[in-house]
Length: 268
Image (tube, rainbow, N blue to C red; front, top):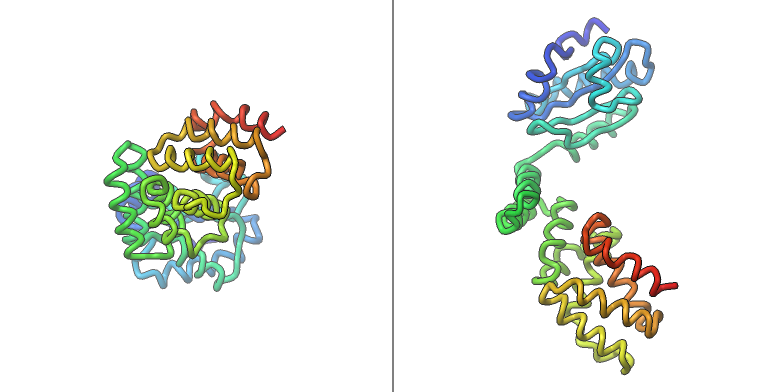
């Protein structure tokens, strides 16, 4: 593929990682024997020429740079990886038509709002939740289509500001994660007027108080107790609430690990 020389890799550190600190870099992993690579070649190069320095293309021949291909987990080609700020923010295996490629790039290329969301995740991971929330709110204000940012912000606010969570996830409630956040947010604002009287009702009212005060563990314990008393109460609300809490906390979270077995035993 002689005509691809302008895009060929010279030095991965400089051409990809360092350059991606300033501009998105799309890396195309290919080989001369790969027919889908030949199909993708003119499409991706045409888009790169049209990009006007919005992003750069770097092509890596996996036969010449098998070490780099192995390092970045390339198991099949063509494979595209979009680097920004030194890390992969999107990848794609296989070839696609020009119109689909344009749409994929439009969706995946970073913007000011996406950059804010990425920065927010770093602050949150480092324990600066307040700064992370501020950046996520600003990112969503710039681009309301940022689904991951909406979900991330909703997770952080679900206990303290359930009414805001309702607004954040209403448009994406078809997603399972959003559906669970919506369940928790609505539960935290319930008045229980239409709930059948009995011990489960009292337990759920107490659970609401605990969750509003971010007392997760005692809330889970009462939910498990409610399941033991009546699994089916109010459309299995206790079960659904625990599942939502576990998913929001994550399976690796110590609270999830601590109560997962008790929850499973209560169900069966």
